[in-house]
Image (cartoon, rainbow, N blue to C red; front, side, top):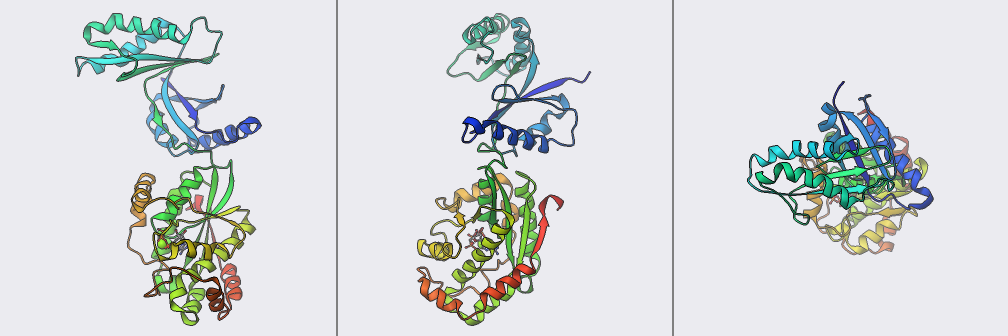
Length: 395
Ligand code: ATP
Ligand code: MG
């Protein structure tokens, strides 16, 4: 028989709690099954606020890597299921601790027990004592001491109704809420550093994030398009089933460049993007737009300019990065693996035709006067008619 391991998964916030709890748990279980698909020798169970996986030992490292891509998990541990027999648990502890004592002459340790089966005849502190003293009997002469507050090694025991799991590791998860529990949103994804991070943050709030990219291939070539494809794919690892909408934007940008005031260009591009994205969101069942804007980061992201773009659509606009500085956004981008793609050199569609002095405090009536000079409704209908829809799972 192949040796088995038990993975004990702890939820983070299971949002709204109460009667919705079952729904959130179901979402999380479904997402875990999805990331682990392709390996059929896994057994699932979910007793009392936990998810347990029974996996082959050889799958443990890969399982750990994959679980780290699932929003909604607070942490997980990989351990061994056994009967709640103190001698057997202590023997396992000794087997795990012994190698650590080979490289040091002192190690502070403790046993921590969590007992969800209250019918179990011993309390948690009693179990700690029973197991801890058996281990100490064997290993105290080799430098092992008990230290509860400063333990360098913690042997953990979870005693449930039908299973007891023993483990000595805790891996952090992505936390937040399981994808699918909040609903769909549409992220305006450029090839830059910021918008992929904001998409990731919304996935961790339980949203399935779809993407829209405003493309200008006649001016910029295919580079931006390829970059966005690869970013969408990277973010989709955390959620699956996303769509990417690619909207041809060259006609609209050309019209704004040729007919509108130069200093308003960026804000005008943005207003058009928001309008078109708003229409896509409504027709595809997305309940909010998401952007990578951060207050004051560039001229188009002042309070006045953000207000001047938000007001063109009635749909909610979320800006998860609004209060973050660039450095911490970059740190997140590196953690989620999008940074390397984002920094590949490629002009974006707002940096071409960049005005010398972009307006920082837009006045809405000046913007509206500029918009009257172009047939923007027709241009946006036409762009929507030519939109490409990509299933990111298939990439
Ligand atoms: P990013 O790093 O995400 O590109 P940025 O700091 O370069 O952000 P801007 O170029 O001002 O900021 O863009 C602000 C936001 O507008 C982006 O985060 C993105 O959400 C959206 N956006 C800009 N250009 C496009 C585009 N071509 N397609 C889709 N969304 C875009
Ligand atoms: Mg950008």
